[in-house]
Length: 237
Image 1 (cartoon, rainbow, N blue to C red):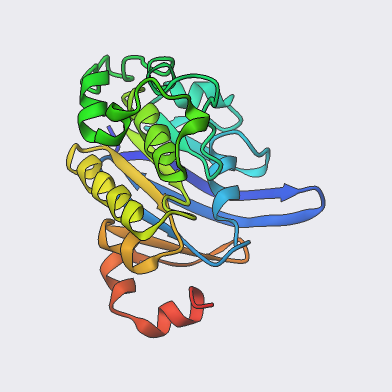
Image 2: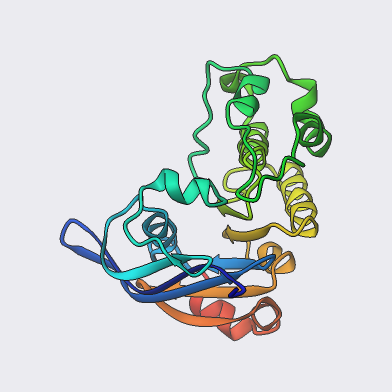
């Protein structure tokens, strides 16, 4: 069986008449951690959402573990072991922390049940202290932890984090990066979008940079860290 977990070839996607993705190829292997990078408006979120069936594709193919999933409904991709933490987090504000977590609980695609409620609360001690609080009562950082914890309750093989630390205080952001490292060590593949290029390349194996809906770099995260000219050219403000 191929080592490819999520793969895409020749993706073209539009918002109305605006051509956003221009023939993008993508792949992530089992257990790999990928930084998806680029300035605002370069197509990062569109790429994620198009692979997950949330944005219609005009052209291209999407495969999960080598199986063609082009145009498949989003729930089928979720059931295949892909969990998505969107930029807006998408928690249920009127449900308690415990209810938000338990409503997502299900075995993994291979039947795994190792991410129990107890394990998630051990990973996110702040959530354990706020188990009865409503989702809407949590701080932004706590909501991000809740969303990641809820994703882990689905026992994913791939976790996609869009704007992992956007708007979070530095102390909370450091806690999120610690959690990302712990998830990596568990063998879960991760795709991470974040504006802090030094932080995201410190916890990933590979980096992919988009400019105007095209891939301009696909290589090691270390290469990005070591190339200040590349960072200035494609990621600088």
